[in-house]
Length: 316
Image (cartoon, rainbow, N blue to C red; front, side):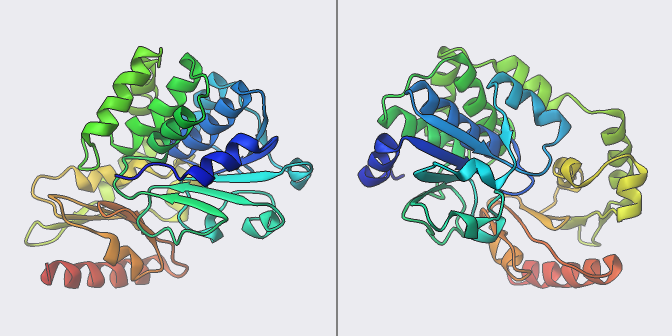
């Protein structure tokens, strides 16, 4: 388990105006790490701007509220910045900023991430795939900077760790992630609220989409592979959109005996690394949880992905 590089810390320490960014379709870890870093830098007296165009899922809005974080969506927010800090983003093409990664090329770039497929892009990179989350890494960055960590900041970082470990139940839960979570709780993280909001707060529309996912879930004959799908019409018919789609892969994953769950968000069980399967479709992520995007007709993509998943299992 690595620690943040001295040069990375010095770039953050000496910067005056920092653009903090994450990935497209931000999840709790993205908000916890990028938003938490922005909040911590502000506590040090710096100007930190959270660049995040596009939507944020309804159930994650509370994190922005806790941190009193305003999302900057226009390229003008880059004016005057002397550093860009990108968190939880494995690929340059997924950087969620106005103008994308290309708009940051005039700045030194700090890259903090826990995805195994991160190439180490940027000026200074700290990549550690053994970490539970980028939020856990940001906590250590802020500690190295001697940044004040109050209850608001502790809650943001705790939410990122809680979400990416699925409530400390996945194989990426380590003694270190539990130690960091305990320290955040001591600093006032709103533990029960995070659990309530992330795990027990489903809107009527999201519940309707879950019904679709349950209805569409299928199981292979040997019981090792489960998958589900939802068409654009089914998603919008439930009142949902792309910002809502994230947790539904847990439905096929919850079936006893499953080794692989497929929804173009891939999940491996029992220590099985799913990363190589996601990479076949131009995706990436973690060993136990990865994803990919494909364009085409839904039925054809499902057939292609399932064929690859079956072959993947056959060789494991």
